[in-house]
Image (cartoon, rainbow, N blue to C red; front, top):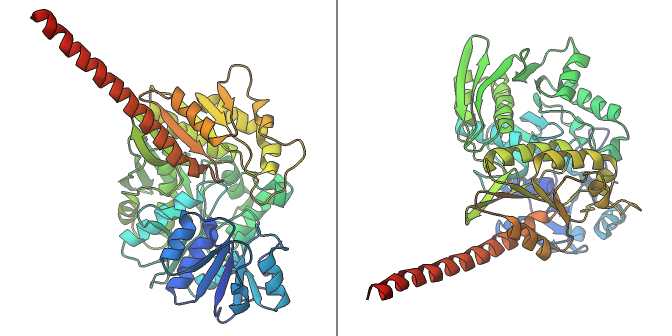
Length: 486
């Protein structure tokens, strides 16, 4: 598998760029920034998506399939850990001696010469990066930013700016976040994930230690056990801590979670308040971490709080898609047990007295094998009814004996759930159960988000049918008394 360069080398120029896997969440942002900087960019992906269509609409050449022929015209090929070594275009690039860069090296090329802020953490990176990018924009900075998800206020995941600041989502899944050496590192939390790559919890934690040590300054969440342990291990290295924890230097308090997150932050003797345009305590916590970054970058507490205020969210981070017949539909990328529990907590807050109906597509065979008990625990406590689908394998080959059934076996007898691998039948199950006031959440980092239009269409169909029946009955009732009165 492709790895970032250990020697730190980068080409002086990229020339014509071809990207293998251009539709990926991280790759698409790189493509957009390079294109905006004037590079000729082409790319391939195995399937068309909204992302590939958006890239094509912006002027980037996108080929759906595995062998476009564009490699022959490229000076540089960019790819990822997820793309196999035997991919036809990777084989062709090596045969022709074309420079091949891991996407993290491409990000390092984008950030070269800029004041880089790298946002890391096992969970919350994409949202925190989006909050930071939009906050700096609100505060007058024309930043360069590359996020792992679409920033709602921008409609894209990345942009090339003219200021000295560069904001990057730093992906820890293959340890590539260790090559950036940023001016400021933000750590939202630390959990034992991506064990298929790291091999052990200790290796994950050691990587985050190195990430913080590689930065000039760092901001770390003290509410998270893993991040708090990191602070302890690195002492006396100074970091700016944040959270509701009493020892946090930047203290979050007075949090209101719905309908929008509002809170107060205190730093020393100063306090300021902010209000987001999204619900949830976790969003308030992420915004507080961003405020910490802005303090280290030179802004005042008042300006930092003003910068994060009004944040509208990142795509696939408890993203609202519509309300039909009093039933609200959201989509979230949660796949790790901690993320699942957090998303379900927000869903329960939003639903109030209503039910939370979850449609969950497990991600990766290895993660399902390692974390089936923790996933079952999250759904047992947070979801009123869950519809489980088949595992989305992504870059992995199937593992014998590893299926969604591993999660189901650990749910227990009192848990309400269905297993339905067929998407249309899964939609019917969700719609038939949902009542006004309920919340339906599709949850996956795979392709389950594509089910949302079907879900909304079926809800609309059922609701319109119900309205028709109601109107017919209402008409009969109005006619009856008038006849009797005659």
